[in-house]
Length: 510
Image (cartoon, rainbow, N blue to C red; front, side, top):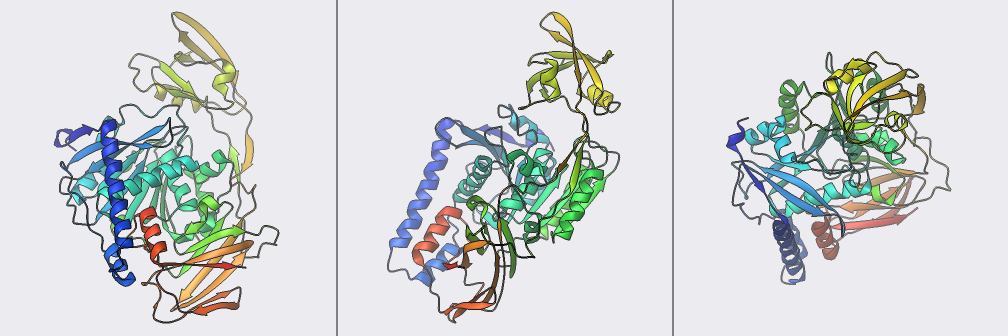
């Protein structure tokens, strides 16, 4: 793409206030409608479902950087791309792209420059789609609750200001971004139509947070995953068994492999057009008549029209609540440092070290060291080191020659022995629920669930007729249901979702 085609706009802190002011104005308008008693519940539902009051941006064909206020001391930057032909009266798809290396200490510098060449932007411009580029760091990692809520909040802010098609929001990313695409599908799929994991690892979120995920949850959305055979982190030979296990668990999964490629997005030109076409053909269906959902936490309790309100882990799990597991081997050769990508002299400059124990720390490597040799062989750049690492195995000794200031020193270390571990954490008790509906009749089965909720929408059921609910084979509810005006408004303000505009929440104790 011709970079000069785009105008790059950096919005400073005062613009953040403007964006939130627009969001606040949005909330006030919706509350005013709620309080207007001349508008019937049915009319209010129709008005909100067809909400189309969005400002036309002053500029299009631009990248704009905003900030999301996480807490009193932390602002998370994010960048929005507005296509040249964006029109505020037309529903517009949104692609959310998550970068790799999210465990870094600071947010990526000059990220605006990095995304100019993002292959997805070319297609977003061509197809007139919006794009969202969140930035993450160790305090807003994609799989931490703070990071997940950060992205959700960014989407909701954008929904207040841009006419985003609720049923055409897609999330993708490379490396950590690919792993996070999996993780959102596993724990927080509601906003998205599909998930596209590029050179990711489905278990990263579970391993890093030391919390469970459940691959049966992948039945609720389409997942499109790609791995490569020469990937030093997540080679397809190791990832494929996990994909096969996911299919056994009922995942809605398309899996691909590319050969002769390492941990790089070298297949972008070939694959991105295919993924864009896949996005065209897949829209979100929040009213799908069958849901399975399993969770251990109230933070990840909701999938479309079904919610686990509370658990009853004293109960015995039903046979259909299965735990899928596979043993993984850890034989990766890693030092455990991030290199300075802006360093343009011979050698590899250490920017910082990863958290926790690692070979680099044990060797005494520190930030600002410049690695010039590995085992006596010169390393001009990180590619040289990666090539040398292919000759190493777990348990091998290693020597690095570094420049520390003006002094040249040698550091000695040893890679740890090969270890084995479970792919998924199951260290917290969980409950599961599966539900179907046909007409106005809901059939719900529960396992270790104390209380659950069903969300209703006029596109699911005919509210002129009674709604019946069976729980574990016994009918517990059969009655007419009316629109709950306050709940509908509360839900709309919270989620900004014109499709998933739930009008009633029915709660049941088991």
